[in-house]
Length: 548
Image (cartoon, rainbow, N blue to C red):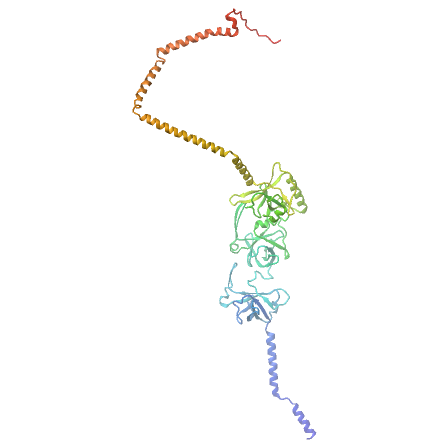
């Protein structure tokens, strides 16, 4: 074989057949289609929720402002079966909607405090609502909300943080009221198991955020508020919504400056009180603590009861009883019941600071020396509620400064009921000391004598009845009548018209004249007994003269 033929054969083997162009073109088309497919679809996200009710793969859509932005591709259980895992494919261009502030929840028919919502899903089926966030940090895995959010993150208004020790007092969606008007909603709640405190997040919608100031107090609005205290009872009714579900109301207590609006100070935390009265008590941040040792029963005395001075409230009962476990150890004032009270100078003075508190403590100590004492009194006879009353007493005993668990003891005296009890006890002691037994013995003897006398009288009456029933006694009435006639005749002979009466009268007149005649002789004999023997000299009339 020549060199020329060999070269021709090599050129023949290097030539590519046009048939291979077909699979090459198909491969290029498939790659382009794959690239187009991958480039034209949006990101995949993972949604986690407790219950996948109403979610159907391939049918449930994801919407934002009622625009389809994605679709659920699969629904499955987690490996530990504690929740449902939902995979969804978002539409192209929706990457900007997915960040750490984005929220998802299921829209379906609901009947809540705000009314009925989601009726449009009865025929079309439930769908997933997307609420875009404003963060710059992208995210592709989200936990779905059980309830729709109260307001979007970029809504105009004010978000507040509240703390309360009463867990379960509020729920998400409960109204926030100001003088009965709804100005916001409870947005979120979380219970801290370590501190045992509930943290609430409230949203106050614009333009009502300026109503919240630094001196604002928040308390629960129960709808119906019936309060029965030592001062009487009160009944309050809120709005229909608060009547059904409750809520939060706020305001500035009386006699307190309005304060400045807090603006966008989201770090400020408020306390949530159980009612308006407790919210008012929370305004008295400066107070003096004392322990009152009670001789009487403390039944009817509760925390929050007033402490008064001559009818003016000056403080509040804080704890009943207070550290009673230390009573036996300290042995202060015997075994009386300790009650912790607070004297609140802010009720009597507008501005109170630490220096003025010292002045108040010194002033109250001086009042103790002058006889200021505390006692329990009944504020409501219907409920038996008690309150602590303070007043001055006459001739107070000398007071020695004492403490109970490091708190100064407020001197006290028995209350009105204890004083009445003492008087009743003293009266009973006097009654016990009376000689009741000897008196009863005498009474028994007297009754026995009376019984014997009655028996004798009964016997005498029986004897008289026998005499009267005797036939010989029946003729006595005629003899008695004759005797009475004789007496009558005898008495008639001494009447004024009878002769004997005239003779007796003349005799009495003669006797009177004789007695008058004998009076001088009797006087003379009385003055000079020897006048019957010797002649009586002439008696000179006495002459008046002055003493030498």
